[in-house]
Length: 242
Image 1 (cartoon, helix red, strand yellow):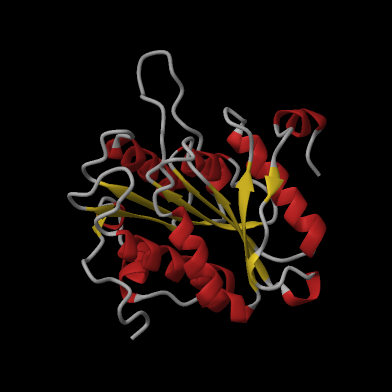
Image 2 (cartoon, rainbow, N blue to C red):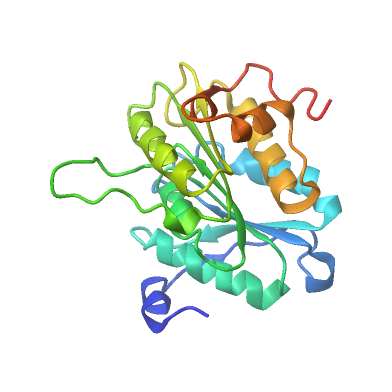
């Protein structure tokens, strides 16, 4: 259960209405908790991802909740609170933490929750590394399946920082992969359909089937840096698992 401190930090957080499975515990076999970025006006691929997860995973019992919190709220604490809330509602089902921007960083940070099976981090906003600052932790990613996706032209969150984190994460957890969306920015708008398809493929494979499309399988198996600089091909998702 959440500690008192985490409960205080997550004050005001709540789960949006379930998309996909009908939300009754008996019908739900997996849960995705989606953590948006810091700006309500720049949601990146979050909304289309919710719709795609509901469409593709709903028949298998996947429920997707967006984690809502006040502006300036503590996203990692909200992610941990949301994971506790999902366990309270649905029982012992696997969870995925998926986030974009600041939410992508929070998904990585909160991955140590015992119910979390996998993490999807889209364009995570990570702090600059420098003298006197500690690198982002990665031990909490051990035992989870981890997907990081970043646009190479992201001017808001440095893609090199997510690459460096992925390198360290891969040492602690072989089930880590990272895809690069070439010539795309923070919102990955030019290749949004591919980013959404990749995320859905990864989530459904991690939570349910254990199978992935060939690019994801190759990225998970490849040693650094190959599996951490995997290019996201244009048109990905048109023939998944084909």
